[in-house]
Length: 380
Image (cartoon, rainbow, N blue to C red; front, side):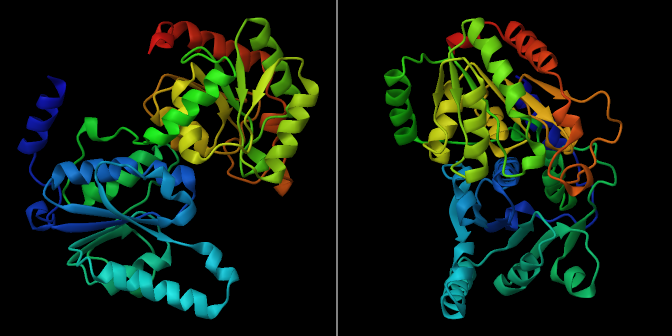
């Protein structure tokens, strides 16, 4: 009933901008998001909303190759174009060949609309290259940028707007107002990943909805909680009877952090660090009762899979990057008024006092509270 009401309200709203585009004239659209994994996943509602506004249209994506799993299987995406950044190490000839293939593939699609979701200069070149009738991107200085797009939208002046909503502002700027049901994250591990993970969990005696995933690492060390505190939390959860799974990327720094945690904890832990593909990680997260981690792509993946999240935040802003549309708790320092500073640790040290001093007891309390609040979800 709510969904139908939302669609009716959206249909009744006149375009909020004088230069709104006509979605009926958009037959193919390209959405560009050249950022990290979590950023790409947080752009997934743009494809859903755009498809609802122009259901007849084919909507393509352009992302870095390593982030493609974040959008693979999205029901609104027709073609997923990628840029392989590893070619930078293979010489100018390989790079030119790859760029030429990409340009030809994009031009062959004859886009009517380009939605560029960052201020990456490459988006301006590509928008000109494909010759789309309409292009929308964030505001940025310079005549070249301004004349590359027919529409531009302002980025938030304050860090109190979630990144999902900022991404959707691109559509609002061209007169396409997203319905509330369009705003959910969309991540699809796929049947193969679900099947493999089902076998993997069974081999460890883990039941669906009956274990907790802890993902302590991040590609940015200044976002991480100390190993000793994480180990203490694992000991507490294990004493309460919870089976525990540790996950992490194969990156050496994350492996070092996980090794330190394992050395300090007495809890029996299933360590899957470096063993899972992104789709497999998504399947594991979807099977978990709860996710505990820092501001990272896996935190957003857990939210997309509908798994309750306890997220630890330090220098980054939870208003912008917090768990989206899932039962959650954000745990952040109440002693450091300087957060969120956005810096790579205090003084650029890669260590953040607001996380180093975050008590394990506060995180444990948030976990217990969220488990009580979401009691019954184990039977999903």
